[in-house]
Image 1: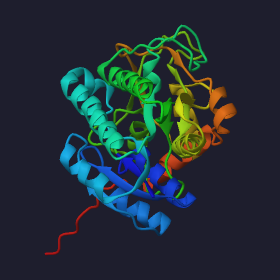
Image 2: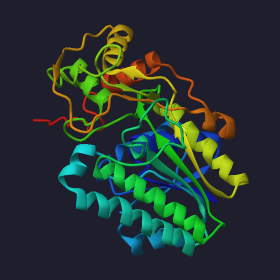
Image 3: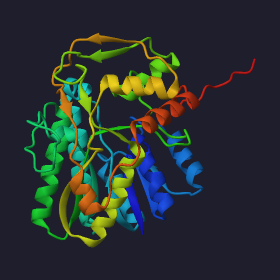
Image 4: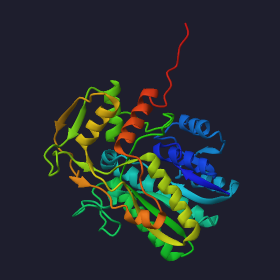
Length: 343
């Protein structure tokens, strides 16, 4: 039996694939490659020395997805596939709702049809909206401030309703905070298309000279230095949380929610300064106006994951910065390889 990894060619999915294979799982990856690159699949195989099936398939293609279920005996699903850019979701909300929600409904429908009722879902701290206080625990009220966040919240509601309708399901909802970093080998990492939406890949692209300077959105928040505070977590710690959740579902029916964060908030300037210090690389930056919808402080209370799953983040901010820079310097163009033209 194997684990189906949807979105397994993406940033978090590819790191999860490595950890699953290292731990002894067999995997099958499904990805439509709309926001990822097939080269990551080659590198997962290179890092682990293991082969596995890969299907270029969109979760909206129910017939093709059904064929994949028919051809494999799945034990569980790790569901990473989905559109994820907050700004883009505001511009094209219907695409986000259709892709993320309909794709998940197709997936769950086929899981039920083929009696695969164990699911680890990639949710997000965006479902907490504007929290009244920090640290944020799983009991906080839920809301969302953009279409991307609403798709995550709606999917959580769908999965809760699914469990109510059929109590044989085993579901873990993992609410990520701010994943950064890369595999320590430098072979896989975050590979944004075009202008990065996330802070760390923008920092590394400035550091390597692809971008002139970093725009810091707001320096007048009520924080220790005026810039927004977030809970940055190393992607390897994050995916290890997924494996712990999978083990938990082996022994427990039901639906459970877990925050995956460090429990420590660092500001944007803290991250810039840590990156500059650990990598001896200055980052030019400028302060610009706040972005609509951004909140001042957001960090997790990860106590539940530690008590129930036996998981906690282990890597510190310096490791996150060092591994991000190694990925960028070893892969200045991401997974896109320069083609040498012979005359």
